[in-house]
Image (cartoon, rainbow, N blue to C red; front, side):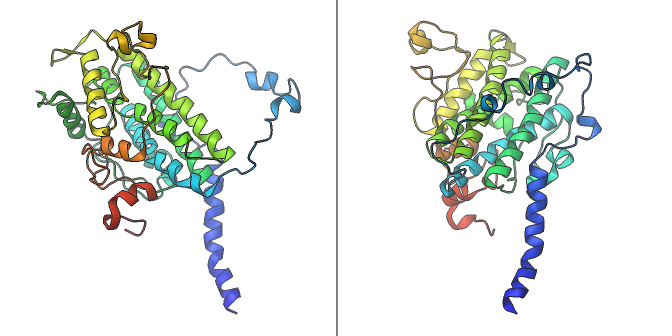
Amino acid sequence: MASSSSSHAAAPFFLLLLLLQQLCSSGVTLPDQFVDDSTYPPERPPAVALFSNYGGPSVCKPPPPYIPVAVFPHDVDPVQFALNLEFTEAEFFLHGAYGEGLDQIAPWLALGGPPPVGAREANLDEETRRVVKEFALQEIGHIRAITRTVGGIPRPLINLSADNFAWVMDMAFGYPLNPPFDPYANSLNFLLACYLIPYLGINGYVGTNSMIDGYKTKELVAGLLGVEAGQDAVIRALLFERRGEAVAPYGMTVAEFTDRVSELRNRLGRCGAKDEGLTVPRELGAEGAICTNVLSADRDSLSYARTPAQLLGILYLTGDERVPGGFFPEGANGRIAWSFLGANKSPGN
């Protein structure tokens, strides 16, 4: 009787699990305000329909994995940790471009976590808004893909207020900017604020790669890294075009802002130089031959890696993974982040 009773009690859990799996296995049906059909090309057969059978299954089917395990247990925590950054990017881009966030488009992905603080629509020109809209919708896919592969964590409390971004810039320059920096004021400010976060996703995924072994997990991280790197490259390229422009009303150039932010992240990360602005001394440029620095990379032009502890020190703005603040005033979520907070935070709190 006890076995029968426990199986009946478990039934609702498995039904919920199946429902979540179904929701996470496909895209979302976007509310009308998130659908933009103004750039659709003229109607024609899509390329995927024209070429879907070309080459046959032997060409399309990937080779078998060397290690036939999709997800190892030790893969889960480092990949789930990445959700903290993905949630942050999703909410910042969604609110900046649309004025609404994850709770309006795919609330189940937040797993009951609190809405962000201070996020709002930015005053963007049309071209910048199109770029940010695309990034915003991509982040929803990232959260869904991670949740589907290794399971989700609740969205942490995220501080995206103008005051928090102003504090970052004040820390970067070493004195209060007057007026306080507002990321939502215009396109240039928003791009400079975008410079703060996606690059850390690259650092995180490069660092995560050596910690995981499942073939599905590696496939996921490689795919995430590719798009995060692309987003960061676009942001840096847009800023690079304006590198000599003075950021009003502060009188410092765009390049100076990026240099100061990169220096700040290096200080807070406490592990040497893993961050570079849009210009560098020639000896630090690609092959020691150029001062322009559209992409941040090491002496072999490889992306820098950062550990979860280093990332948390930067995102908390405290330089200490044990002391929350900054973008995560109550701390990030997941077992890795909780482990640094000890009894102060746990899955049950």
